[in-house]
Image (cartoon, rainbow, N blue to C red; front, side, top):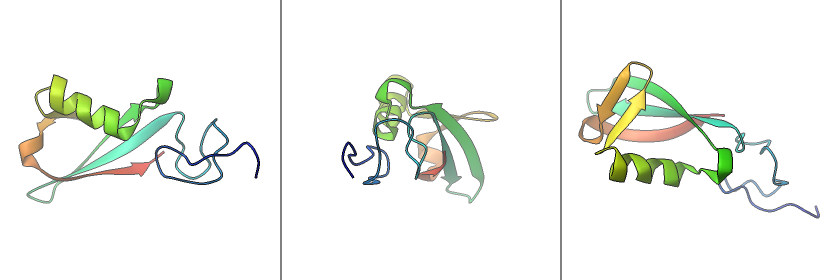
Length: 88
């Protein structure tokens, strides 16, 4: 397919540069946190201006002291076992 390239979020080969049909890159991305105790928390961020998961993660670690936002507030990275991109 001409004019397509891999999506920077999920690697989908059929991404045309707008909103990815596979992961929704190009708008908001939902993130799931799993704490070390097994609690599951959710958050989301906008992919406006090519803001990737890696950039979002690095910003939280470098500029927010390792605190990640979620629906109920913020949680420290030391309490997290895993962070995943789940919904788009």
